[in-house]
Length: 458
Picture 1 (cartoon, helix red, strand yellow):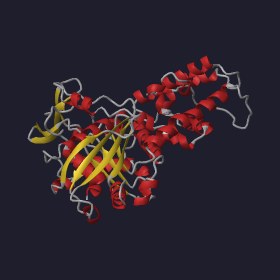
Picture 2 (tube, rainbow, N blue to C red; picture 1 turned 60 degrees about the vertical axis):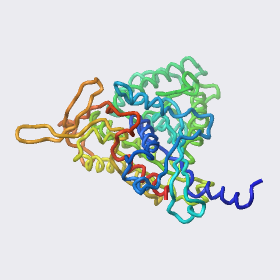
Picture 3 (cartoon, one colour; picture 1 turned 180 degrees about the vertical axis):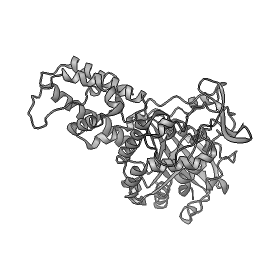
């Protein structure tokens, strides 16, 4: 049996910042998988390379090393880190495959503590932390936890304007001939649900981000299940309908989706996080148009309401964890020239302002940065007569070498007129070649790590 002293030491090791869960949040194509891959790669190289000067623990030579650990949740697949690195180190480097299901990875960092409470336990300490990867589409379902079927239906119909209304026409036409009060017809329900799913896919393809339910466009193991076969309808909630009607079945499936899919996903993966990084791709919406840009902003605002915020103490971390730090990061900073990074951060601050207000009300720490998890371009200049213009150089998605000045990033939220002038042209690049025995090139990953983990490594 363990002595009382051993029991106390074990408790202190568990509670004194020895374990942290980080929520890597972002919509589809924001770069979550690339961020996690780079985070793991950077930390695994801390004992042999000085690639993280802005992470104070590595700058002060207090990090001894890092390693991967077996995950504690044996029901969740491991994050495909080795497969991602294989794609990045291929002869023709490619970005890691997008996430299609939940996965997890756990790391341990051994370091020399500076806090007296940790020094009492020994000359070294270990920080264990878990990171969850998941499809960005699934994140869009979290707001459903606070809406009944009628509220959700109303929210979907109120969003129908502009491009979204045009894309919804086939689904709206199908609703015209759909009888809510008729006896349940599962074949008809499935057919209309498919039309609604096609509408969500069309929204996503058009650059719109608020597609809900998110599992409809990336169902995972639930593909073909009746729980994914419902859709918004217009109905009078005060009118009574038979328990065997189409409307009753739609309500039942929505409630089942809430409880068995969304609530379970939130409970198992998000309710226990105490740090959060929100990855935002501000550049792609600048290409897609005003509707896409504002749609992403609205989606981010809604998502931030779904997380639990509040200052963490030792007891709170043990019994009721809360997110106490949030970092907003504008990804793909390597796709613009360096002097535009300040504008990119300013634009991000404008874009997440409503979400920032949600979090700041809880009196937690927040910050904004621009970063590139895995660098895809080099910076330089191109000649334009007697002038030199800043430029980026890389390989585009068609494997063609390209040197380009992408334009100026707006400092504030652009008006709809901005897209008439095409002041910015986003180009997608492939990752730069890298060596297997060296950490991946990045921009400000160390700054992100310092914000998320710096105080835990003291």
